[in-house]
View 1 (cartoon, rainbow, N blue to C red):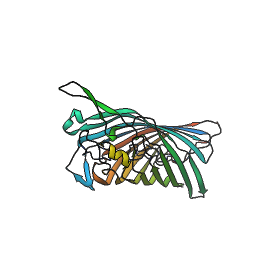
View 2 (cartoon, rainbow, N blue to C red):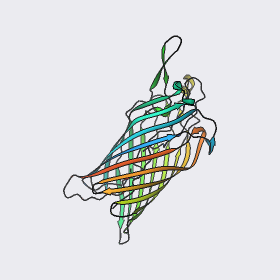
View 3 (spheres, helix red, strand yellow):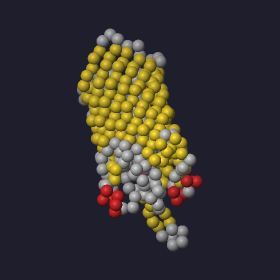
View 4 (cartoon, rainbow, N blue to C red):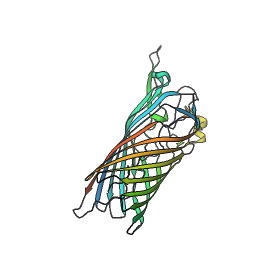
Length: 346
């Protein structure tokens, strides 16, 4: 049986910073979810290990002011390539423990008119997420099966949140360091809490309806910054085409609040970005194709933004695609291959 796996993934609130003047605007080129490919996970079968890896590519060059496209630009484009890994073990038929890890192959902000002095890049390990989930209710009759799952997770930053780029002063030859924009830091540097809910109704003829909710309570990082809390609600319809192939369609809404900065730090330090230029509301439609080959499952998903509203002027969401593969490993010979949609961050 083929189930949908969703995504969205895993960028924190993207912020543009101008290194020499306090005119930096924040951008929201990706999703605020720390979970890539994990926004619609149920539980896996008892004594079963599920290994999942997915690749997410994001690219954007359009700026928005409010809900309208803006002619004002602060850089040429933003793009990133993100690799996400998830290891989920079914301790019982109701409880699944998941360990998830993200790694940026690269994050890049290209300066206006391809200015090399305003171009920043980074790469490296991002965050570790501990994400247990528990099925609190399950009912089944001849026509359908209904499942309700709750989860509580913790995000631990592993990568750097304060990287800088070396610059050479052309006259003196002196090397100085410019702080990278928050958009190209591989992590926010804060511990976040994840609250998750999942509702599924699976029908006997290869059709499923389900919904997921994720709320991320952001923490403070050592720099005195707190990214805005993130919330998303998704509705899915999935249909099995044949034994090996299925499709699903997702309608998702996302919202991120404006970030906060410690008043003392904001007063004493020189901020190279505008904290008020953060936060957004967005709506996406996401078609997905799934291919199931025995224990292997392959999926492809594209995120299509249909509505965007940002605070002040920010870069909007552009191209977002995901490719993934999962493999189910029965730890015990008696374990059955029973999986409640384990979709595919932020």
